Image (cartoon, rainbow, N blue to C red; front, side, top):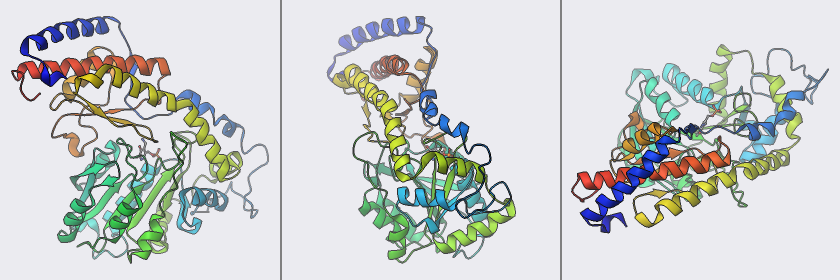
Length: 428
Ligand code: PMP
């Protein structure tokens, strides 16, 4: 344990770590663990899409010509497949274009300009605050910030966000209009919201009549183990709790088929969907239904999606395992870092010694290892303890993941020892 070392021992360790780091820097690496992107091998799993729908194929099961305008709600066959997978009524699910982030953007902009169902006035005409389980998804926070919405961080554990803290914050303050939620294998902690947490979130009294949970189930199907958990029926629970309109649900096939050429979904109560479609209908005459047809033909049915996800798992589970193994081997005995062991999703969340994450990322950069900037997973980029680093291991080949994590571990240790020496061995 680093905390048990004397100053002399720390100085000696610093010398050997510095030599190890200089050697690492001398290797001229160029490794990148920054973004949660599928690897080329993963994308290859869906190359069948490139041949579809095929010559002369452009009608849905009802015979509609999908080449033309219209069909704002998306292809019924695709909604049926994802309704089954996401455990919700396909009638409450709309299939859109390629990006769920764009659907999130639209639903928030519509809320700002027009007010959502149940609003007293448009959000733009009042102060709006969103609660942000932290660490969370940087693009959620960037979007929220860009729309002028105030962000308040709330804690998150392995079972989901701190419901007591959230209940307290929503109870008194009518400006609290939103809660970001990534309920399955959260980005970046891997948290999986338990049914109890979900029940509490959809039931709690809120000062705002138009409070929304932004339910981003981006990783609902992205299991890394045999345990293929079923998504919680959040819309059903919200309706049961007397708050049917509380949830805006989102998902996409970005990490199922092609990250840039998939299909996104919006799920919500009938009243919310009518509201959303009324505004969406001003923005577009309909989505790319040919791409939706291509996906229906490629998947076949819900089981087709599940089996594709198992093939993804076959390609990426070992990358997650190698991260855990190298971090354990290199850092385990020193007591300077903790990291998550997710059962799904795309990320590992690493907490290093307090006030060293920025230094670790800078050391990595100098050694040719690109990490997401420290603080990215926090509203306004502010990590109060400067300790969190997000690891995204899916994109690089396995040997590069191992090399990058080994280098990262050197930087974590070096920064921790530097901090202890600078603090005279106290509280690194
Ligand atoms: N939500 C989360 C939690 C994500 O991690 C990502 C991708 N990194 C997205 C949404 C982006 O989704 P899409 O590609 O559908 O816009």
